[in-house]
Image (cartoon, rainbow, N blue to C red; front, top):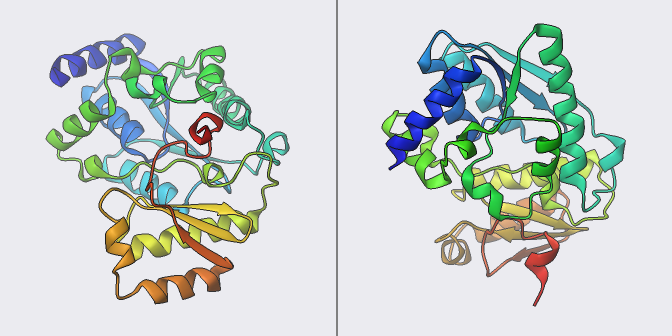
Length: 267
């Protein structure tokens, strides 16, 4: 079934012909970019927005991916937009409007006809106000249009021998901070450093949700018992405190998307 959807995706990309792919370095946009690049004879460019609330690891992996596959890649540096400085509940909508506005301008300046993103069919079911912004800006989402869900994309990426096929999802760092909280570069760097530490200790994909000076760790499935019994646990705690957190907690529900979203917290 995923192969049929992939064929549908190829047709969509061929019809579009000239486009920029908003490239985060995640599985979805990487697969989309790789698939488009392999079609050949398309005019395409990868564009990555680099902001203080994007993980440096994700940016580095995006740069490495495009270099390895010989894909034209442009990076646009953007500071934290003041309109989302206090992390409003409509943050994702406002952020998408702002950042994709930068890509739209770049596409206009360089004569690319369309802008694509890596939204997949599963994304329609979560609290994602950013999708409204993409619709208003007429951003195309070929993966979703072709009916490709996350499972399909990982399966196809594996068949294409892309090492990132099982890479954990990495949403922007603002999702680690409660709504209506002022964002500081210092807090973002604490979160990024804490998650990098957990990655290096063998807990990839873990989230560190920051509640002032409390770090609430959400582990991927199977990691909760591991971290509780980890001989390195005390060293992990000490390291997280050294980063700047006063209290370290482990969320027994584990990682789940959008745990900061309002409806996720309803009893």
